[in-house]
Every structure is written in C-alpha cells, then in structure tokens.
Image (cartoon, rainbow, N blue to C red; front, side, top):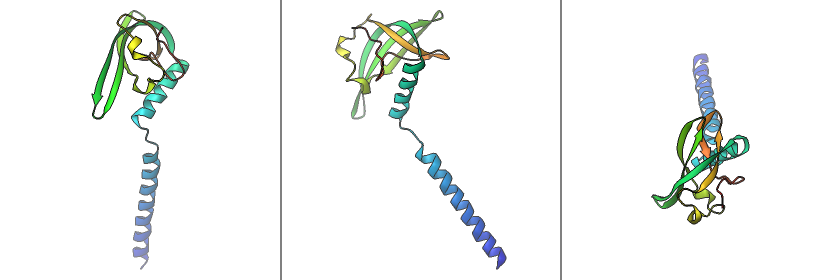
Length: 129
C-alpha cells in the first residue's frame, strides 16, 4: 500500500513540475514583431550614430503580407556594412516614396555588434528629408 502511494505521489509531483515549467517557458515567448520592436528600442536608446547611404527600397510579399525593406550601407572603423531593415511596421513614420538611391541617412548601430543597426524606429528617425 505504501509503495503505491509513493508512486502516485512521485507521478503527481512530476506532472506538476512539468506543467509548471511548460506554463512559465511557454508564456514568455515573444512574437517576431515584439522581438524586432525591442531590438529597435534598444538600439535607438543606446546605439551610436554614423553616416550612411540608402541603397534601395524593396517591397516583397510574404504570403498575404506585403513587406517593405530599406537597404542601406555605412562604415564603422573602416569596415563597410550593407544591411536591410524591415520598415513595414514603421510606415506611419516613413515616406518610402521619398527614399531614393544615394539618399544620405544617419544610422544607429550597436557598438558591440556594428552589424546590428537601424535607420528608423518609433522614437528615432535617421532618414534625412
């Protein structure tokens, strides 16, 4: 009788711990949009600014969703970077039709990872008008 109780108690404990871990690890997952918004926020508040140039504006369709990308280049410590930023969610702040090849822009980048950069965020705009 005692061994059956111990087995049931152990099984119940394992089920409780597994359920608790699944709840805590599953609920903290961020969507890609939330991760991108957080990345833009961090770089816009703590990034360094350098000069860059707009290379192109591309519009693509990802399933039913249309996406806009701003392609730009900039130099940090003698290294040239060419990056793109998905600016689909920033359409209220950016006029993509005024962006043209060779347009000067300010670029904010992460000093610890210079390839991680932005030209626009909700609270900062590097595109010159």
